Image (cartoon, rainbow, N blue to C red):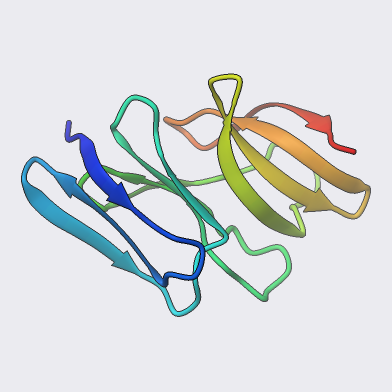
Length: 122
């Protein structure tokens, strides 16, 4: 398994880059991602891709080699309208999600992309 080193991304950048085992990795997007964060174990990067399409699975975890590991998936009956950001809250990867019922923080299983638990934000 690889390891993410020298991670680089800024809010206005359309590319997310890092080094994996001495090999440069760069993922380019048509629009700047909403957020990008390396996983705490170094095995990959969580990226919330920008989308204008409601309900699109735009939150993705990539392995250190740049390959897609998984797209976040919900066990709930309805799909999220959109993902805002992903970052760590109290050492847990958390996605911020908009549903018709409000905005929610969702703790994510970094291996599978499934939701571990969620709570409403205010």
